[in-house]
Length: 344
Image (tube, rainbow, N blue to C red):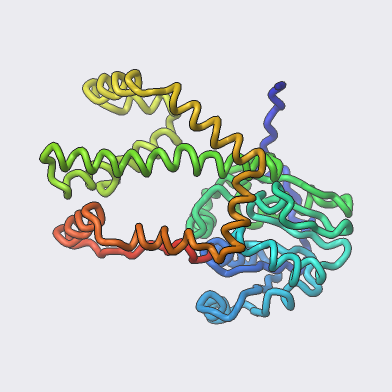
């Protein structure tokens, strides 16, 4: 397969005038939706928020936005940025968004998932955009305020007006992404990439941490020291940050010789062929639509997996108990995590 040249976009590629006078609706006021709405407003755009009646809606009202029900917020909007969880989008889009989109308007998705697997069918007369921030929702706001920006994936999926590209880049600039940069990636590519890394690297990391913790306990190592060494101290996150700033292989030089030597031996001793087979299976399942189909079946059953996930993550276990003891001894707050069902 021929490798296509990757296209990058920066601030100089955007014309803010492409959104001049535009009425922009942000659907969803979770962590990402809130950040996007605030950033757009700070750039001088007229922003309406669409949200169900919940705490997120009340926060949007308190922060000075006009807030309407999801369908009402779409009416008359020039640009609609859909920032709801992937699993909620198909029904919301079909029932409340698509019928109210104005011909010549633009609908923008923050994830390629529903487009890639045919879960939504945008009308023919609207621009269909992908603007997928590669940053935690709250950090989209933080990096905007700091002026540093964040990476995004962008693409025009449907150009009904002839102005889709300029609208897309103006929107990417307005939320603060082009200060860092954006990479052109189709909805299918974005969805495949996102799911692949989550289900391959992400699952391996989770399994690795739990396995190392269990074996460390068996070897007589203190539980508190194990969770600190694995992630709680922040050293592991700094290793990843060094990869981002210095480069993957160059970051190796930031470690001492003992760490480099041991890490090299450990890498050479892994079952790389077995890992590759698993990763290929994961990728094939995603690209075939098998994963999306499983998720649709899960939805039809009322998402029983959420109950299982919550049961595992909420249960008393030695790893969580060790975290709590470390935080207590260090005088740090025990911060509750986001539940599986909480929106973006």
